[in-house]
Image (cartoon, rainbow, N blue to C red; front, side, top):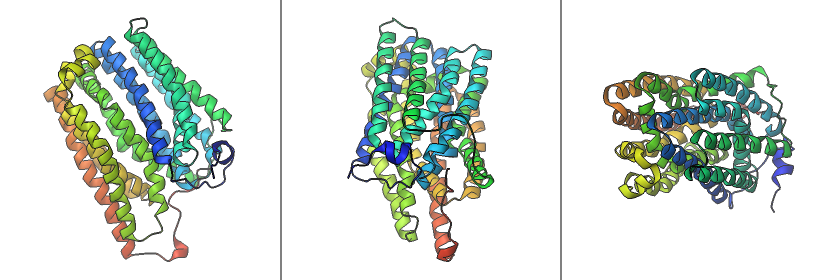
Length: 424
């Protein structure tokens, strides 16, 4: 029987049981639309802008990713794991988006960057958009996410086409993309009955968990975005622009990874009461499936012919071409790292994850910045690939070791806790 998203997720905090049938297919379709829209914007900016302008856009986009990821770690993942608190949690999403957007917009005004200003102003709506999409894909009806992605992709495609035809400058294309996404996020949130007024109404225990996982995100995945800012400060926006030009072509791969992460956490959570062997096999299985799905995409990008690359990126292709293999490896190594991260989240291993995040995040920024200063964009890309490999080994092995430890010291059933406190 088909369950309507509005009645189950948008207006009720009752537990929701994910469907297994066509959810993965629809989720990949949603990810494909999102990937296509962002890819069009990135290609348009890369073709119209100098390498320095591409670097400014990359910074703005990285802060959008940083804000969305922070909201997902502090709010969305808890809702996905618990299946409750969907409506009330939207207040925390709006609050975090408003705070982050205000800071980013002020920084953009001070720096004189229209890209930072546009993304900062639109960020509250953008993170609400991401929340609504993740809920629909993870525990609701994915067709709702498909509808909102279709609407955003249509507006984005029109703006990008105008840019490629030289009817709009690159900052206007990015502005239309950002504000359209923000507006759709607000409209979808209101239609689903979300409480979109900023607020933070949860207890101290839930707040500590949220802050802990937010810190964990900033030290792990978020440190990759923060390192771009450090590279721009010490090595120049041209290095960031070269990295961004290469990553533009890998945009579909990275967005498929993001979509897979939305499905991974509920998938691992469903097997949390099983034996260690079952949970370990589930983690290995989902890692292999995601890796097998993105491997052909990364190989195609790494081996892209010059003619195609120059058509897509224009004059910036020559800067991006030498970085593609290293950046493709970075994307592949992100798969086991993401699964290990999700596993620790399900097991509520907050201290272990934060400690590991401190070690890896503290290593990332100086290594990437140092490599960028000494060897330019190629050095930065090589450092990113090497650090992605280290992260993959660290996160995956940490999760598997945790399962082994808890299996050896299994607590009585009545003392077991839910992996994540309710998000409401």
